[in-house]
Image (cartoon, rainbow, N blue to C red):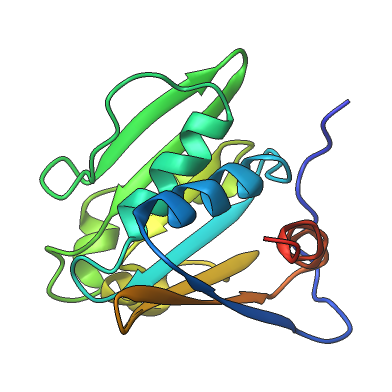
Length: 166
């Protein structure tokens, strides 16, 4: 049985980082994330353009069985992927100039239900977004990428613990 995410505050923040050699390693990590996501989870993806945010999300969606084309919803703001009765919402707020645009777009309701929210560029929505369960930051590192993950809730800590072996 899948249980909804617990968004209560953890006793301490959990942190993990790793080096990803290439896009394939990034997608594999996404697939590992798929093993631990739960209804109601919020995962925020940070990083420069081209750092691998969409590749990581694509790996997560593939790990859940989504075979449809996965692209960053830069112009549509949100893409819906449905698995059985579970909805996954992939957001991209790159085009937002400030957090008022988040409120004006009417997206807040997505963040308080059973759907899983995957957000690229969460900083563009500012304080309008609720705190994530898991925050993942990708950065360039030589020919690969460095990923840093921080769990901010108990369910985020559980998810992070399962992904450490990557």
